Amino acid sequence: MKKLFSILLAVCMLLSLVACGSGDQPDSNAAPTDPASVEVELSEPITISFWHGIVQENMQKTLNEIVDNFNTGIGAEMGITVEVFAKGEMPDCENAVTASIKAGNMPNVTLTEAACVVDWLEAGCVVDMTPYIENENYGLDLTDYYDVYIEDSCNYPVEGYYSLPVYVAGEVMYYNVDFFEANNLTVPTTWAEFEEVCTTISQITGKPAAGWDEGVKCFSTLVEQKGIGYTDREGNLLFANDLAATTEVITWYQSMVQKGIIRTPGEDFFFSGPFANQQVQLYISSGNEGEFINMKIPEDNSFEWSCAPVPQFEDGVEADYCEGFLVSILEGEGDLETRWASWMFVRYLQSYEACQMINSGESRLPFLKSVAASDEFLDNASPAQLAGVVQQDYFYTYPGFVTEKYTSSGLHDYVVIAMDNILNNSADVRTELEALIAQLK
Image 1: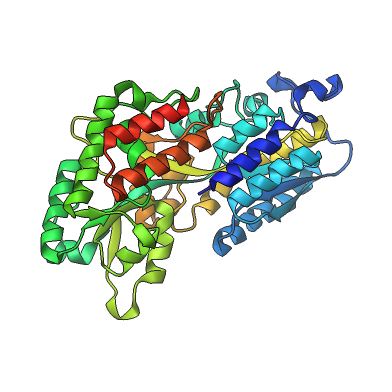
Image 2: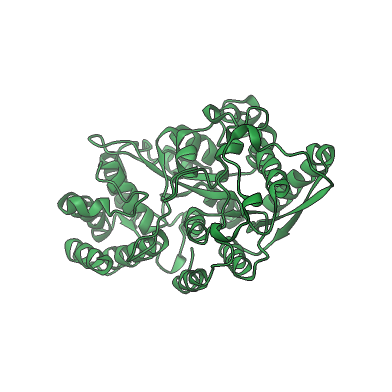
């Protein structure tokens, strides 16, 4: 999670970014808008830079293999070489990119998140990939993507496609298979069933039964499922439009904490530890969390666990939060040849082959329907991946935006604080939400 000081630092840095604005680009270097005109024959071999914030050893190894495959395959054929640079964790990478934009030596391609794409758009440093995507010979088949990832890729204040998915994962519900079978419990699919099961488990164990890793995702998912909405690309606070309904659903969740049938992570920060030690029997978190559970289960007290989709309201709409790392092309000092070379690499990252490789781990989900339906994926998918794929048709994301008062990242941090007060300090929900909204006006 980004720290508030990192966000403020990035915003302060971006206020000084004027050199790379579109008005400073020479006319001969203007990005083409006609899909037929984007193809460029390289006058000489070209090297482009690719920055990322992947730190997990297995994921970084796979990413390096993908880059190598490009360099020895289509890259070699076209005279394109990609140099890959690991820049720490994703917040470190994003801060490094922001600093490089200010210095005028930005990478050609970078992994990032939607909030930073918005910041860089403010500086005029992100390439609109629309004409490249629509190119007849080297474009993309957008019908093979799940809708959420396409919507997310163009869900910015400026019209166009300024990012594409690479690493995506959704929230799932982890549960203790052995405990459920031993106590004849059924995995809940609705929130009414969830509350009932948690009450029963709490009676059996004398402890809270479950939890949700992140309060902000709990908040946004519950208001999305109730049809209230969280926010939109303009930064409107949709949940503030029906404060009574928002208060009601968050108060319901708070009441389960207060009754002691569920809990917050507290000093554990994440539930993978308490779940691995069987202090809770189910919890909701990102599919990424599954990679840590087996590492934490004691050797002398192992158990079987699995995943299921996040429960839904019977009278609501289906919704589940997904997140991930995106890829963007930055303007830099490159000419049309550099942009074309950058696109060819980004296009390879969107290929069936690369998507399949990315999903060879425990938690990443395929953004391409063809990969999700393939035997290669289904035969090797983890419980988190299988549960995540089921939900991809109703995933939602946090759109990136900048308003006069706050950014998408800033709103996220305000909600984190509000939910901490509501769930850990028993703050009155209506009062806390009104205070949150007042801070943003």
